[in-house]
Image 1: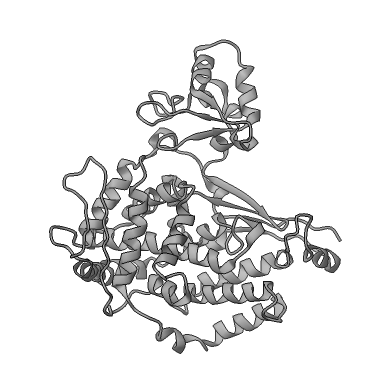
Image 2: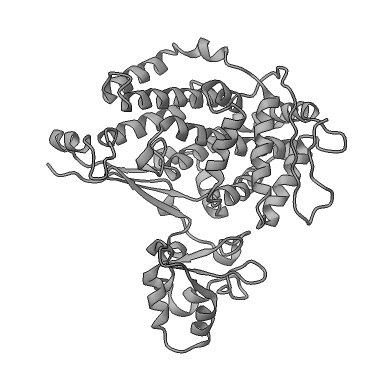
Length: 443
């Protein structure tokens, strides 16, 4: 029986670019890769001012570069794509048609990926319209398109063997089952969101043990037992004993934010988020990690928690889209599948986003709205989704802080009463222009 790929789309089919009406632009603040096929089409264009502009703006990359990044468009002095016209629209599309766009420009913000014969499509939340479409949809999981193909037992057995590169693909036959278990857990409102995410870590560590041969269980049998335990609530009491430490959580959030602010191309929309975040957690002269954590806790309890209690789908949608975008829990490097590491990276991204949202909630207080949430998620996503080293740096920071284990990651997930935590030096220096310096240096 032949195998038909599974195609899952998270609102990607509903996306429509709003062009010059967008409050941001995807043609600013980063390099634009040009695939070889598009480059060759540009070389064949008839003489014109646009052809001259393309020739002057495209830089061919070294020979060893991936064909998808054969060349790149060099940004102008304002760090914008020179192809933008006065209406902030692409001249290539306007003058030549959409067929002449490079693969990256034609597909953004859609992210299409494959694993184990399965194709999935997510959206990059660095696009404001995509962020609105994903975050604000109360029925995102119900709208997620699912086409399930058939797979014979023989095909499943074959795909569980090592492939030509020596990679063991024992999880590929059960990709759909694992993916569904992950999504069901995220959507299970019988548990608070932090507990759902903690249970997700348990799932990942157990699957790692199966993959390494340390746990002699089949994937289907384990998933059935795990789902039964979740349904019974057997792990609730153990999770209540997990550590609660907002100072330690904020410490990591500040360090992650600091990594982003050390980038040279920090954009004004992200600076606005940083200002709102730091003001919302009480930054100012003489601030310490302890004083910041007190304001952080108040912002969470008084403004953040009430808002998301009324709109629980927003963070669930954020997680679902991130799961798809990052190929969680398999990751993008199939040569070294570590579901525990992928879980730590998912937690780091969520903790950073949540931390910013808590500060922004403290800044806007009762006026906190969905537009503030979209702005914050979009601006922060634009800076870490497209930072090629962010995830590796984030994981190194977790290791340095001894937060990559189950206990440390629980601290990043849970927001409750603070327990004593030794302050550490934390510094965030936001770039100009700012009305006042944004710096956090605990005494």
